[in-house]
Length: 77
Length: 251
Picture 1 (spheres, chains in turn brown, cyan):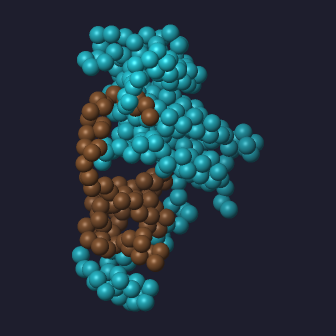
Picture 2 (cartoon, chains in turn green, yellow):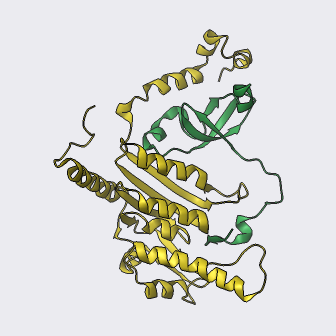
């Protein structure tokens, strides 16, 4: 991989050797979003990943909102 | 916020319990109200932070993931309700392969595409910024044009440098093919010394990007949407032989 970025490499790769918490991706009503779990059934929206600009106007999915979700392993099981 | 844990453990069996939860209620209601009338005929793709490729970057990076964008672009090309695409950039660059793949996909989309550089469109953001039919840059937005650096495990043999030059050639060729910039001008910008503190290269701001021929025009979201709508209208006339009012033909 070649990184072509104006950001210094040491900043980009900082913490690569540490286990840091990452937001998880969930799809709710067909809308893909990145969430930070706050409890087993609740998660806080970090950001939406949608190309439909209208979705961003929906106050229920604004970043910082708490959503109810069922983690994948429960949904599938 | 009220949360009843028993309702979550067995969500299928106790629907009445679920209804008591205002958030779930909201999601269900809003999910239903997302009828086609509220759908946009424009696909809006935002490319922010680092363009992430084959390697997952540490979580302090805000990234735009290749695996999200590629299927979105395929869907936009295929979906008949989508009539145009707006690509908004505020990126510091990223993976060469991923960036060029996204740029090539935007360039080959048959629907009208407009890019808008807001804030910054640096490094690998440059080929993405020039890939659309028409490009805009905000007056204060910047683009850093600099050589590709080697990173990762490097063996000090001449082939390494040949490889690097090839990678650089891919970027230069793409940019010169999709914008009005002359190859020599672009290379001069890329290898200029004395302008960047940590690197060689140039930072071009708003008007300068237009002057060098990299970007088509200076403008913001208003200009970008106006241009995209104009192109969508042109496309409709070309396809149907007559103008169709904005919003499409009622089906």
